[in-house]
Length: 376
Image 1 (tube, rainbow, N blue to C red):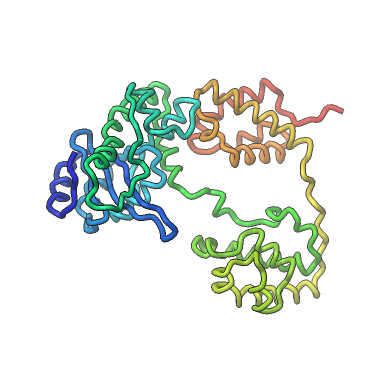
Image 2: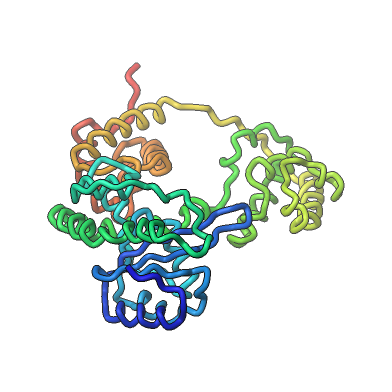
């Protein structure tokens, strides 16, 4: 174990790691209302463990060139927070990632397991988390706290080898790499275009309100990702369509519109609302029919797909929370209902999930009988 807190020691660490292909990493950071601060970086290539003081060392381009090589693989446990912090600190993009927590979810029915649990299950080793909640900003860090930090990467090489052997035997290695990369990606639904059916109570709006909601949907869909972070949420947009504020004072008095959204978009929104209301008076709008809260086909599809999920995941030994999360189950249900046939759910599978689930799910559908028909 080597504590790295000066440029000379950092160069030595980079030289020791240079030429390696697989790096085992972890971080310690401090989170508060002011943001997240990277405090310590633990890295090894399987031999020496380097504990790098991220509070003192900022010029780390040389280390970034080593860890960010085009053929490098990072092995971490539950790395969704660690990888963005490391990438920003090193000034590199995220390399190929093998997340041991996700790997276990694709090799067993267990989800969100701890590193200590994997260490015990795979290596038979026990350990305590005595320093997990300690202050990682304080300096100097006690030797016992540094030893605790080193322990988080010390056994990752053995864990990686065990998981890799099992994944290769089952033909799931690429799925693990794909799922690990997916874990760093934003929710694909977050960037999907907003539609009127996202507003369950849109049917209650009068023609002017419908016109304003249509304007707001078009306005929201034209925003970039950073602007959407500031923009009013669905509740705020619907409140604007319902209230149709005529002035900045009206808009500022709406609790559903955050202060930042008002400061950034207030004038644009008030002007857009006025124009939408004017258009509504000269155009015809058909009142919207209220959507049902449930339909028989949805209940049938949901029930069957939940049963299939349980069977598939136990048979394949994969964690249902990862392989078929709730958001994907809703897409499968909607696709089946739209097709009037359970086979429509197959079209909602993509990527590594499609490769893993398509054939076994198709067999279950054929056995059950695919038509979504109600006996009367």
